[in-house]
Amino acid sequence: MRRSRRSPNARAAPSPPRASWSYRSGAPTSITRFLRLLGPDGLDVRPAGLCDAAEQRFFLQGLERTGFGAGLAPDDLETLGFFTCHADLEDELIRALGTDGVQQVIDDQGDLRTLRLFQKQPAQRERPVEAQLRRFMGTIGGRKEHYARALTEALDLTRLPRPLDGLLAHV
View: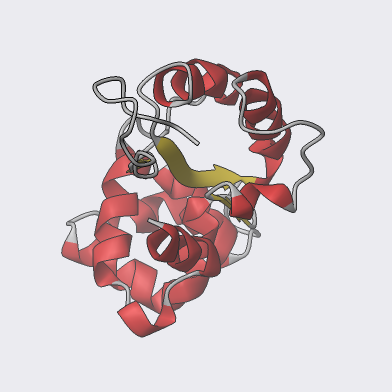
């Protein structure tokens, strides 16, 4: 039980506040640095967030190294406030909105002509539309972040992707 430093008779301090952040650095191995900043030896907030399936092990290692648990397994991530996207956030948003919905958002953002030119490239012609859309979002710096926001704003709140719904319920 934590006690306030001001009074030895004080009641237990409230739980640490929760923190959610957008972590899109492209270097999942540096998650430990953020967890140190936010964790028990830092600001003492309970971090929460999304991670890509391929990044789970880095998140687990970072959580263990910064005092959030020991011997953690992928199933422990949600309990700690981290929700895993099937492939990545773009994949979750594309599945939630459908390809037509995503293309409408791209059109609304003024990028439909650019998408159509991209889809005509030899390397893209035979790929499924979902794969083309994911790749399109990653072709220019800042586009993933831009479309993460635009696609999220277009979501029907009753049909959120599971990881995003879990994160929002957690925080």
